[in-house]
Amino acid sequence: MGGRPNDYPTDIDRQAEEMFFQLVKDYAQRQGITERLKTENQMEWVGRMNNCKAQAEEVIMAKLIMI
Image 1 (cartoon, rainbow, N blue to C red):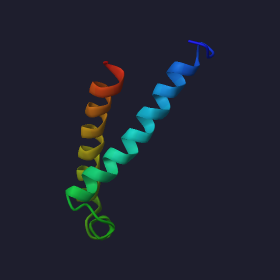
Image 2 (image 1 turned 180 degrees about the horizontal axis):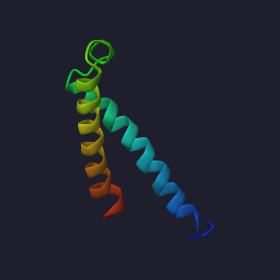
Image 3 (image 1 turned 60 degrees about the horizontal axis):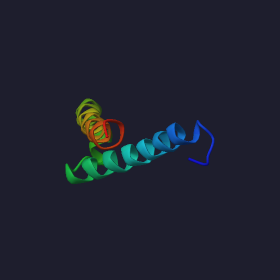
Image 4 (image 1 turned 90 degrees about the horizontal axis):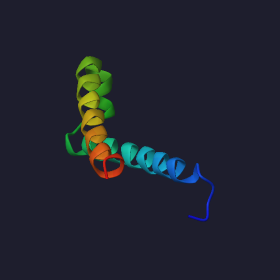
């Protein structure tokens, strides 16, 4: 551990943030959540995106935080 004491938590935070945004994007794409849906039915879009975010958070907690 040659770095500063705060380097490790900062690195984990950066990894978690990058992973979060990529997972949300992937989940939304797989579920067909589009900008068109956002325009036509905002409440449906919000609900489905919130689901994607919750799934991504679960994965991140399991893979990065709870190691």
